[in-house]
Length: 511
Image 1 (cartoon, rainbow, N blue to C red):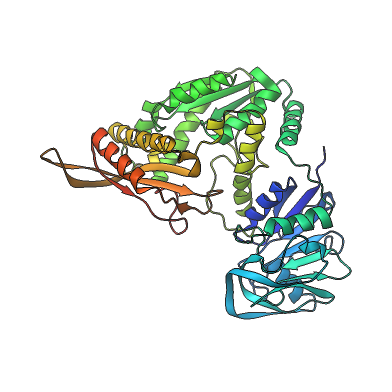
Image 2: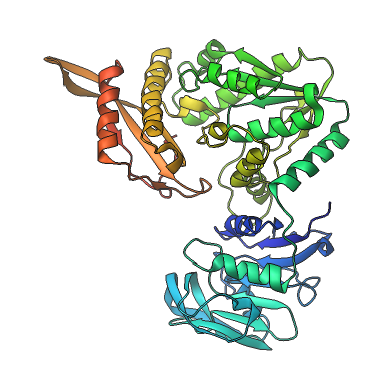
């Protein structure tokens, strides 16, 4: 089935992925491409959205897209930088704003009987984020909306299906942003809303059957959402020809290896559990630098995985749980405008010696879509609701070097924290939670004796995608009970602190 597609051209805005997620929430398929790498098959897209950008259209580093095959030929929505670009280079005027227009604003004028603003009333809150402003509209520009400080907050171009706005409809603070995107995409551009979890499962399973035939596929399971949903899609397509390997690196949560294996067996998957704890701990011995720890874990995982893959006769494919944000961030590194935040271990494949072709069933999906796809296949709610857990596991939550004793301490602390979150019905209100073992000993008193033991930090954040995150205001009573339980039950810990840093400037993990 060929979906109606929407093309999002990325000019480097921190919100570009958010635009895509909002479009997908309308059950419309969209793709993000760098502004200077417009797909050759642009005819297959039914509408185009231009993203914002940290750049200025008045600067020397102005980003010039080639819109010759798009503008006037396809419905187009230009957001922020896009709106200023159309104005500046099409007979209008963009100037530096007297005040940086950032934050909440309200529409105090909306042109009547405009399809673009159907269902949106005067006073609607919008989110501004720009330091330039449009002083004069482009040729054939028609004013559609204003705020108190921004006269040309929205406009259209007569004779084209081109709309432009100087605010961000994709962010939560623009209260009618979803309605605006729906007005443009569904009612003006006539894009069909046919991108659903059920349609994704049906099409993906058919594609996998055609692509893989009777070939054998090996997949490294992590116990997380992405690899588990990828496994179920492949299982539906090729059944017993899927060989799953779940490696215990000794850095999982308490009892996680056995618990997750049991869960997978209940799903009917062909899974082999490999306990390589001793091998990983040996590879990590004496390493304190987080990057060196990551590299040692990655190298050891590939070695263990390769050993196990060799036991399967004639395996031809490696399956990975790569998701769309991984792909976008990795593509950006090769010349796209968005800053690359990190390199992803599961993009770009394995070392040459493995000689396997790669299949990535989820590479078009965002994390929330992965969960919805899993739910449509009736996967276990507890598995789909699991918090993200870092690939290197507890290795990057133990600051400094690793020992078996430190891993034991942190597993016990983490188990108390996570179990209490579940007991207090707080687990599902948190995006990610965990404990960090700090390289700090402090004085304490237990019984009548002086102690000199470890300090742990608890961390819980709320987020939608992990790109930004706020610390969660957990109840004092919860923190008090959890702290007491940790100090009383975990030998070696005499102090508990709670991390109240947001991302940015901090990151979710400490290493």
